[in-house]
Length: 260
Image (cartoon, rainbow, N blue to C red; front, side, top):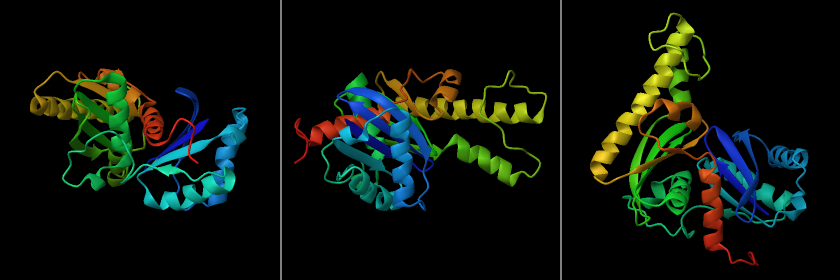
C-alpha cells in the first residue's frame, strides 16, 4: 500500500492506495507546532479505526506548502513507518514542463493537481482548487503547466468579514434560499456563496479568453462541492484529484518493485 499526504495551509489530507484504488482518505488540521509523536499517533489511530494494517504500507509520498511541516512528517515517516518519504519538489519527475518564470515558486499541490487533471481528463484544462487560497491553473492539451492565478479562499474572505465587521457573526457555508435575503445570516451566506461563485466564473472566463480554445474546468478541494453548483463554468468536481496526482507522481519516480 502507498500512503499519500497532501499538506495544505489549513488541512492535511491523507490517502491510502492499493495500486490505483484509493482505499481510505482522511482530512486533519495542519498544525505546525504539533510534535512528531502527536501526528504519528493521529495517523496510526486513523489507520486503526479504518481496520488498516499500517505495517503493510510500503512507501510514502508527500506534497507540502507549509515547509515547517516537513520537519514533522519526515521524521514521523521514519519513526512510525520505517520509510523515507518521497517529497514533491525540485528534482522530482512529474512528466510536466512548467512554463513559469521561476518554476520553484509554484506550489507543489498546484503541480500535483495539474498532473492528475491531464492524466485523467486530457485536453485543455483549467484546474480550480478551493483551499485556504483558491488557485486557478491552466494545463495545455500537451500536458504543460502554463501558469494561473491565486485568489483568497472563501474561508479567508468570510473570516475577514467577521473580524473586521464587529456586528456580523460567523456563518456556515451553505446555499441561501434567496439572493435578496431577509436576515443577517442569510445575507452573509448569499454574499459569500454567490459572490464567490461570481469570482470563480469571472476568473475562469478571462482565462478561457486568453487560452482561446475549448477548455474543460475541473474543481477540487474541500469547498468544491459547495461552490460548483452555483457556477456556470465548472464542469467536473474531483475531490480526490490531488491524492490521485500524488500516486501518479510516485509511480513516475519509483520502479514497480519499489525503492531499494
